[in-house]
Length: 357
Length: 283
Image 1: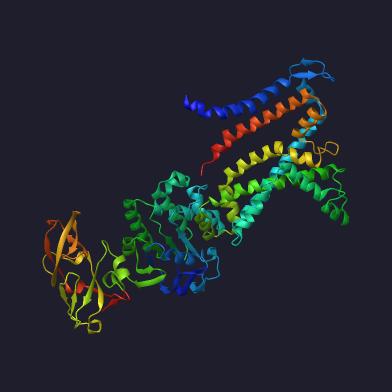
Image 2: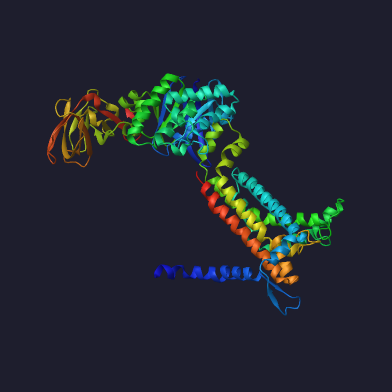
């Protein structure tokens, strides 16, 4: 068990810089998730922690040791790969025992550790099988088993659930969370799936284009996204982002359809400036709210538990998505007034994309 | 009708260039001519009986076994080392690979001539160097040296082919497997022997068969250019003996019988290849 410290981490392939200086302190026992779109550098960052990619600049420490120059095998880590990376010519047992044999543990202890891990993961019946005789979910468990038998200081997960079907993914997500909580081993988990990010992590890092857009707990990030990017990335369906303008005295927002939203706190510094306005689909309501905006309904999707409404803001072309609780019947083509609570409005500076409070 | 038309050219080629000569050889192997070619006698298996009783023939058999084991072993192991190393090269991979593939494009006789020029006792530069450092090099007199030279030449030409297959096989192993092994604590050597090598066994088996067939048959040109089977038959492998006995010694029946035996060997190797080895490809 150990904490992980990243200091000014940069990565460049030739002249192409893919990670632009990341500082991050990961506490011992935390489950942290790195989330971002493909190509944002999240896997590269994880692979740098693992020692599979060299570090161009900066320093990574695991525990008290700077690991920059250490081989992956010397870092006391275990990694679960997206494609599981099980050794195809070895049985499940041998797959799990491989690392232990290299640690030169006595046979009896290897046996004990593998059996124990197999029991936790419920794969005891498959120990003599080859990976190709297993289903995707079972392979995933073996990959996890191979990681936990080594009792490492750090677990690294590289999109481990993305090859599973939706149902299994939800199940394994829960199991990974429980397992991590039980073992208390510091874990870094990379995903592009924002639901996994929200549910798994104690801490979340949202990466975009090699920069950390925001660090924080999932709820902090959900409630106070630091930038337009984070706002759009976290949450499903994603946040409605409308181009608007701050009124001349900074006390109201002017929407694309001309309607105005009064602000409780004036922002005179932004007076007259173009801003981006963010409102989460789930914060709209048909009745209530501090103010209302007109919604032209295009499509209504009934999900049972809630209803998704796709439409436009009044007669403008700005798209809006609403998520209303329960079954709601709305006439498509009609215009309804929908309410928004004052504190559900996020304002971002349009030039920098940063949050304005 | 169309399907038959489409396969007809292939069947015609097989019949004319494989089946017909094979049948001819088989028929020829049952015949013995007198020394002046005046009469031919049908003798059933007498040619084969003579062969098995001939100490030169059994010696050539052993020599061929030694030769092909040496060539296949050396060509495969050096190609494997080179292929494993190319995986670790970062700069100039293409140049390295291209250069390694060139020898494959050289015709066997040319390859033989190349090695003759380097090792000829009177004009070869390496022969001169060896003699200078006090090593008595003359493969035209020393049978072991002659064998070593043809083994090296035949190996040199085959490394390129093996290299290509090994590189492709190693590349087809998912990178994450190697990385997983690295994280599990395996160093480069151990990764090679416990992960890469077991995973390329299908390729290794395939190459083993191909290399043995190569050493048995395709090395004729090399041997013909370097030693002509000499000195004192020291490099006369089976396929060279077929030529020597048939076209130099003019024992057509005996030569045909030897061809038939070689044919049987090829058939057995091919059956092994298809029956057992291809099925072992399971990853």
